[in-house]
Image 1: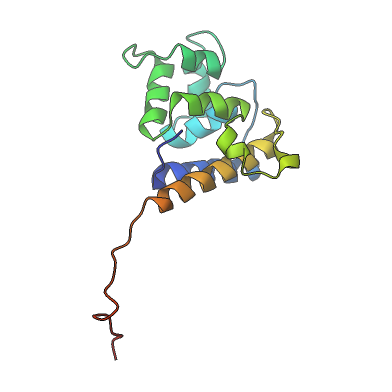
Image 2: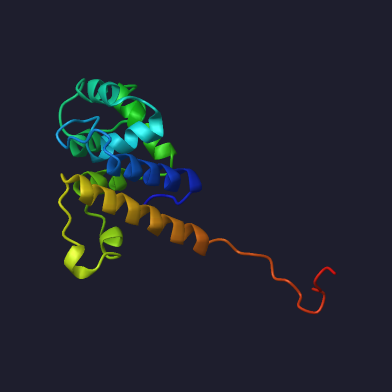
Length: 156
């Protein structure tokens, strides 16, 4: 799963918020689908640019990710590389496109775990819960210094 970091968490939340507020969403469009919308946020490329890059090779995001080569210099591989540098893993991209990460889905009530991968509201819910999961993981790894109760006195 993704490497939790504040920038990635913020990007997931911004993507969810933009989709919730009506940003273009089109599951069959490489720049406007689940991965495409997150790619826009992480790379600052437009929907059209991402789509054009992806069309230089065949397939949807799952096929693009399966054929990903970090040294190919294919434009879509550069997009994927930038997403990986933000803390995502290849598996995260596959899961995002189909909304299938079990750890994310387990955080939903049982009756709400069957998300439709091509419905905006379900994508928003998935992104929001994924961001919360990563935030929980990030916070769990932060150790605060231990304060000596005897030495600690409030300032007067």
